[in-house]
Length: 236
Image 1 (cartoon, helix red, strand yellow):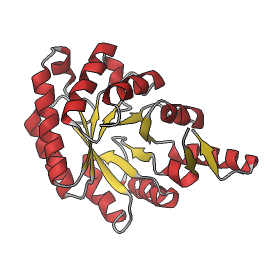
Image 2: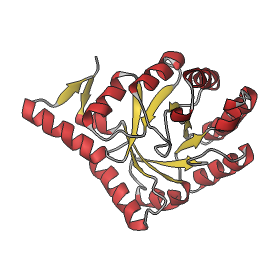
Image 3: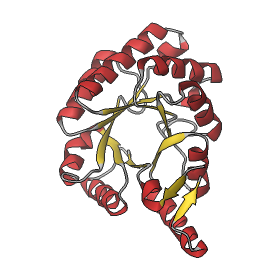
Image 4: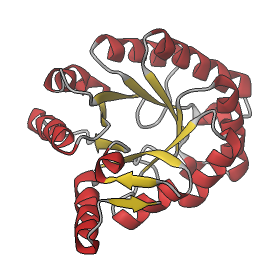
């Protein structure tokens, strides 16, 4: 069991707005909420990077750009360019989607090369890297194989989902991913995490970052619970 203050829990949240119709006002609101709650990161589409980096300048809140999102169906060269462009515009975290077609074809050398190239750019620039699996389209064996490749390449995080697939994060998948990478790579749960119970369940099963658009609602729910119980922390 680990003791978490409310701020500790906030620092696990990647506050998310990846809607294709998000406006500049929506991005402003996202960033202001992130500042108000001291969330770890804003998770945004790559084109919003410069705007959000400007709004969050001078804070410790990261700007996380989604790369080849949400399908992952672009070449390594395209993903590399998009990653470099995002970093140049102020991203200090990168969440990229793997090429599921090549994973299904058991083209593991391609998957590893893709991961190595993107993670290498992130390391060179002091930027955190996250590899999105999109588990809803994968078998347990495919999830395990991807986690094994990640354990070798060592991105900062492996991530369950985009939130745009047919399913999101499950505690079972988080536990499986964590069981393979151990302490060498962290796990991010994302997709369908809309309430405090689900949020806590993901942490219980090994997630060290939570991507969600319901962060404000979730944190307020936990805050109310702690106030009712007369506590200032929670054990998970």
